[in-house]
Image 1 (cartoon, rainbow, N blue to C red):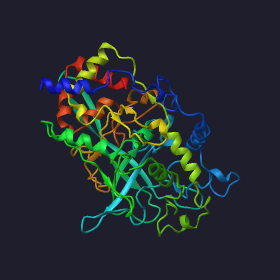
Image 2: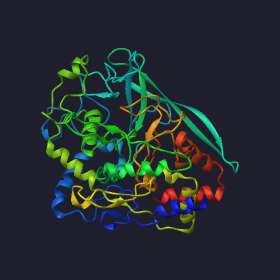
Image 3: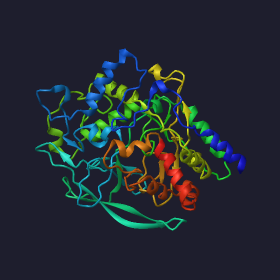
Image 4: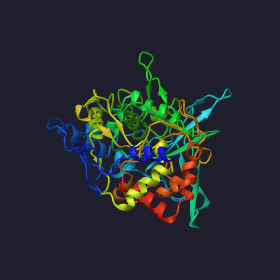
Length: 443
């Protein structure tokens, strides 16, 4: 066990970022919105175009600014920035009376054979907003039940267990529908994650298979098209999307109602006649050039360097390894040698994720399968930039649905494959726990 602990500790980067030409030591409010220092001059204009489109408040078609019209007819946000303030994470409402601003709700139904499908009327995502003349789909509200956890040193932590209710249906009753809340995730390192090969991800499955704890994640294989080989999903809280370009196009379609070559039809179902009759902002509304610009922008955002390591942070690294958090939050991977753009190729990336699905137990389960991921399986969340979350945005949430208000609350919700790590944190002394949190906040 001592030898395993030493091996685990050696895997964790001891402060600093290996590739300073793609990272930044900025720790201000704009820390997650800076370009990589080594970005070629030839890409600056496209990067800036992508940033403008990302920050842009889209408008209803037709308009005098056709490059940025086509909002809706049904939508959740006016801009990408609305759900990802400062390129950081969103949050959940604190009470049922507070509307969702940087959170959305996924929907699905189950047939008699147990197959899961998009809701036949409301689709895969509830759109709470709509353009004039089109009914919105409804309202979602979050309710909380308090759950108390007492740590070994006597500190009591109050957690909040969310449930989601739907009301004001715009197109008939919702019926027996599966729901899952999702807050906007932080967006750094998206291009580097895209540049990691499937083989590199699979290496960690072999490593986990040899662990005495038996913690084994699994890749979420996705078949994009019949004539293409399957790829491992790596984006989304259930790793349900394999490429960054697809992630961006889907977000534009579902969150803003903007069509693209990947999603050429408006996000209206057959029964939403007013939605189908609404004017379009183009065919498609997001051009290939615009999609490429946003893709480049998100790909070349600088990775925040960890804070300067102190004795407490160093001690916290030891606690991170001792609690076996490293088994799933893999400290580093290397991107493919042939990644495009070349700036992203052959890079060590300290993302602290294995990008695999793990069963996290019943307390975190949303009971809503997604593709091949069950209702209790979640992709290991990358931890890089974690310590900047509250610097970048005024109020943030943690975990897929924002139920956790602090990093410690997020840890205490871990179960299933991470139950032993959660229990280890509960049993830590005050000094050990504070050091662990200091280490996480240094990332």
